[in-house]
Amino acid sequence: MTKLQSLIQMLFALSIGVVGAILFIYLQLPLPWLLGAIFASSIAMRFESLPIQSPKPFSAPARILIGLTIGSAFTPEILEFIDIYLYSLLLVIPYTIITIIAGMYYYYRYQGFDKKTAYLSAMPGGVVEMVIIGEEIKADIVKITLVQSSRLFFIVVSLPFIIQYVFKIDISGNKLITTPISQINIPEFAVLFVLGVIAGFVAKKIRLSAAYLIGPMLISIFVHATGIITTTIPDEFLKFVQVVFGTIIGFTFIGVKLKEIFKTLFATLGHFIILAIISTTFIVIAYYSFGFPVISTLLAFSPGGQAELNLIAILVAANVPYITLHHIVRLFIVMNIAPIFAKKIKG
Image 1: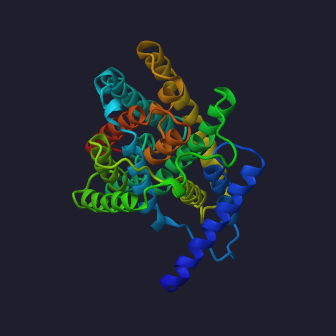
Image 2: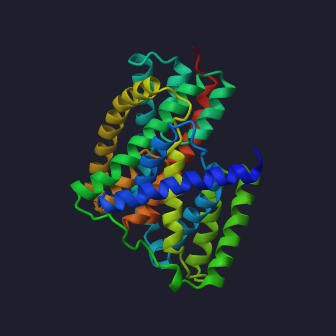
């Protein structure tokens, strides 16, 4: 297959994601551009005759755009409150450790996973990194991939419904999220995007975790916090980012039999309930101790993918810096704990 054919198939998959988004807009369901794309692509990829493939190469530019958007929220006014966030950030340490221990016990004791596989399956974040570590220590990478992907699926799908129907925050339909492209300073945005691309490659070169997200985010924080650049990411681009991530998530279970998918989803549902209990406990502690808005606290202590949760935070106009810092700390703990203890686990 040529690169052109591969590109056409990826674009076709993204088009199916857009169709799903339009359907969700019509039904007035939460986060239509993300959840609609997940729904449509997860159905489409079951039909092997369709000339489609996962648009994974689009993930890097999509992550760069999210990183730049996150960074744009770090205004000089927001940075004045960083010291107040510190107390809440300290809760991330016990939260992450308890989450790992509880998840490992669940998968080892009740799902029959070996200790290494159970340990990496329980990690709250870093799907790709956990699979790489799993290969090195000879864990079951198929189970790790399925479980981690299922956890992400449950969180990404459930949170929008919780936000819309429990907290009564409207995130349905085709409403404007940020500034439309017609009102954007195009030359300044072009400079911002180029800086983001460079920062992403540099971060990848020095092996920074989540390089294409963190690198652009850091450069965006710098230029926005100093006032060098004031332009934000166009609304249309963020909708495209949602379709990309939704379509990629929908393709997660490609090539896996439906029986295995349902078995994994059922197994992960138990872990998801455990995560919900732990997260709720820490959300209540943080909310009543520090008084941050409940939506921001909810997203800060949700054990999902950093890119996906930050995207949801942007879409619901939550406190993005507060949420981002919590996930950076969680990711830092996970990425440092996982390799050290994984090699010491026997059996």
